[in-house]
Image 1: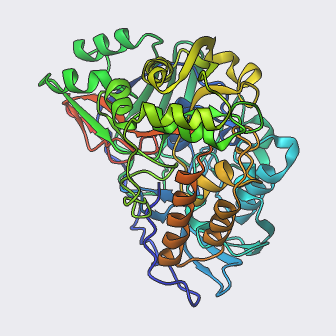
Image 2: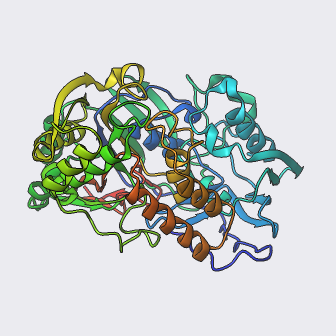
Length: 503
């Protein structure tokens, strides 16, 4: 999640221009082989929804802004921006001379076409709901784009760094699915689903001396054990998203290096508030009393995560650290269930996604830990490939997980506000205090005021939980020791502009 660093937004403020030196030829330095678990389902960045696809998004394309590994926002295709005092008009100055992979210069026309396409319901763009505050866009000249918003939004430049809002050429919109063209450091040479995607260095990339890798291969290796064995044998350079139980063992191998970083990604037991028994907040509170989240972190994540009250992770300055992590109180949980009309406890199925081992383990762990508190959970397994069609938004109780978003607003409002797009699909939760706090937070650009709002939201959520948000999960990758200047990004993608391979 983004740590907001603006000190004030009282008057229109200019973001420091990003200096671009004269372009120099990048010195290629080796190749990089990254092992992934599944094929990419789409090459259209606006429609990507998998972590594996987000890696591709950030290697082949650029956004107007970019999020670093420390979660700070910096210029990308926009070299600077200004905003009006009311936070409703944002003006972005574009870099000059940026080329698409086909050699054409990127201009404001491409930016506007990109966002119009995302906002068009016919596109079915995954991130559309996060950008519906855009009321109008204009291009006063080829290197300036003006966004006019329907309401004040202090984090607008931040959300332009997200995965799927990458700038595409206005004259190649219909060929994205088969012949993607971006401005990114790498061009796509070939893609064979089930095998690999081969990316090559873009020699006309706009940042001097970058990238350094000659080629990057995204290898599809479904079995984690095979991926790890290939890494240990030197047949792979990187394994993306290693399971938490592998972090410590792989860290002991001197030929490798492992990074495990805190993130705003979270897993939860989704409770449908519109369906009994979870339409009663006492039942939802009783479940929290029955299961100690610290035990869940140790048993499910092997300690590679932390308990949380909401999608705001514990390492964020807006996290409500004063709210205690509830210790298991089975007797209290049973007492609350009796008050809710369940003297013999509650028996309910919990659906877990086959193919997502951590979330499977979460479901089984909850089954074991909740029993003494009066909850009998019948674990039902459904393949993850069928989850959207058969489980999400339909089952009364199921395990699922969600990647971090680029801002606290985009990570909370859609999920917890009564009118939120994800809330309508998940728990159907409604709490007036939560709604009021979330609305107030997105209408101010002052981080101190936002913090007050988000603390209020978390306290209301602790008293009236939407479901069981178990933890913020660490994200870990393993590398051959020869891989240099490549860091594990909390948003689960890679920035490979500066990386090189000493092997």
